[in-house]
Length: 192
Image 1 (cartoon, rainbow, N blue to C red):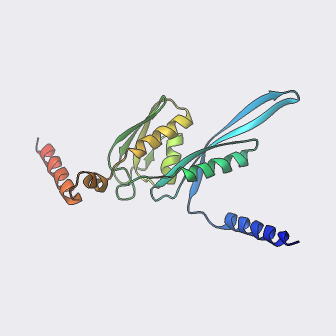
Image 2 (image 1 turned 120 degrees about the horizontal axis):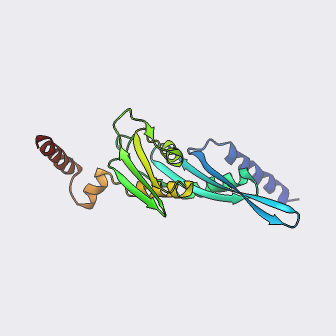
Image 3 (image 1 turned 135 degrees about the vertical axis):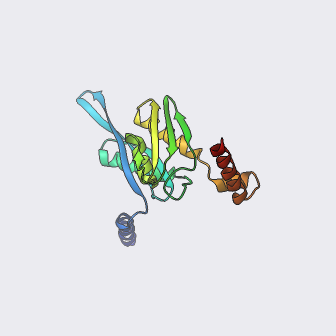
């Protein structure tokens, strides 16, 4: 008898967790159905690829497998929340610099874009940028169009993104000195 109230409390806490609005939004990128042939016929399984983000510079991807689609999506979402990375954004809308990312045969090239450009990217990459909160970017996939490779290559590129603050810290100089050098180089290039 003493165990019953505890069980009820646990179920209430679980339902509260489901009801609370999450700070993350998730997008289903790809779902794959596989069949295993057994004595009675075919047994189907599902694999899901999901990206999650808070639209403020944090993003993650995950992969989940199960016999039912909703369970595969739930597993993938949980895995994505454990795999979050922070991406520095310029003015909260685009990248600081152009970057190339690769995973396997998948290569992606990401370019910073001026305000008003929007997200110019294909399929799986677009989902990553949507949940990341990026507003202006031009991206090109070169090589494999496999969604898994494209998402992982995009994450590889995003991991190599540096902000002026992190570069200045690494070089032991002030951000203003770094920015001053940059504007000096830009004016010299314009004069040529």
